[in-house]
Image (cartoon, rainbow, N blue to C red; front, side):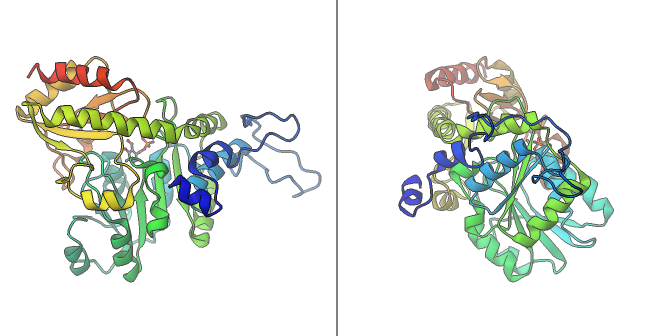
Length: 387
Ligand code: PLP
């Protein structure tokens, strides 16, 4: 990908990650973007300012981050938020009351909770849809749909969907397409180039990359949508602090090298799991029989650092393995340098119990970090040998 960009005259991915929006600071020459803590900015005369008035409306450190990540998503506009869910909430405010949200039937539990428990009672109906079956999607498309919302790969089953095909179905029917690109990151997939209207991120994950900041991001190339999103970003005010912007900005600089290592380590873990007697099924988009493998191979540069699997011994075995690893830390979240293990049914996706988005109780999700792969494989093997 980088080569194509360079030959077409656009700087490569990592060059943009390190330089977009981050010119040396003009007064001192500081190479690192300063953390601008000032909440207010002096004006020469009323309304005559240098582009900043009040830090909720705009902040120089936030601008640097917004420029950087928008550039990586190949989007004209970027907006940073206080969390991934704050970013999602900002997007949902584009809808008019009565417009339906179609949600892919595997998604982050918090997204499901926001749509079904916060927005639905306010008069925004929603339906869970099987995005694998495009004929059914076309045939059963509800007329009142305003927005289709998908993750690819999904959390936690890592199913992949053809963004271009879904965007074309939605656009023929006048609906907006939102893609949560948290798992893939812009290094592996750029949904806007595939027809998505809006990309959303939990920047808490791979963008930040070090488990030390909660953040969210929205990108779009649609000027009209951007105007509304920026209006609500300021009007509702779910903005990130300058220090948090700095942490994400710094994390993103190394996104490409981290993602290459995440993918490489994930493959080593998948090889172990595929041959272990305790494992029922390995879920990883690179596997030829994985749901959506063809879409992933078409639209992703590589297959990511997330791996899920089910255990032959059911829920008890899953609970035991989750508690038995030493390098893989038992914890929620994902996408950082350290490896994490979790039981989605009891942890990240507990809010989806009893819904169409409920996950199997023998499922384990791994966020494969960038430690030495031999240590990760040995750790996991020892845990699997206990069941
Ligand atoms: N989207 C996905 C795919 C996630 O996994 C998460 C959190 O785990 C979110 C959105 C929400 O992001 P945040 O926790 O930063 O609010």
